[in-house]
Amino acid sequence: MHIQIEKVTGRIISINAPQTNPDLISLDVELTDEIQQSPHLYVWSGSQFVLDSVIQEELKAVSRLAAAKRYLAETDFYITRKLETGTAVPSAVGLKRHQARAILVENLPDFEG
Image (cartoon, rainbow, N blue to C red; front, top):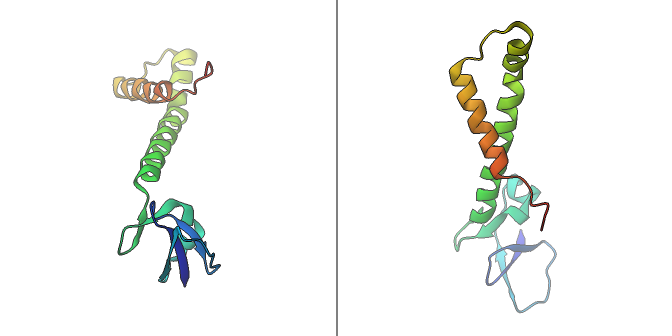
C-alpha cells in the first residue's frame, strides 16, 4: 500500500492516492483493517502506525462518560423502588451513583463560552 504521512505529525494524509507535496513522506506499508477504516486515529511512530495519544485520551474520556451514564441508567430502578416502596438504596449503589454523577457534572458543556 502506498501511504503518505505528514512529516511533522505523522498523520496519514493519503492511502493509495499519491499527492505531490513536499511536506509529505511516502511509505510502502500494509495497513490493518482497523487503520484503513479509521486512518485519522493513527500516527506513524517511525516504525509502525499507533493510536494517537491525544485521541486515546479522548476515547478513554468518552468511554468513562458512557460508563457513568450506563451505570445510572442501570441502577435507576433502585431510586424508583425507593420512591414507590420506601426500600432503601444499597449504600454501595448510592456511592457509585454519586461518583457517576460527579463524572458527568465535571464534563458538562460550557454554555457561557
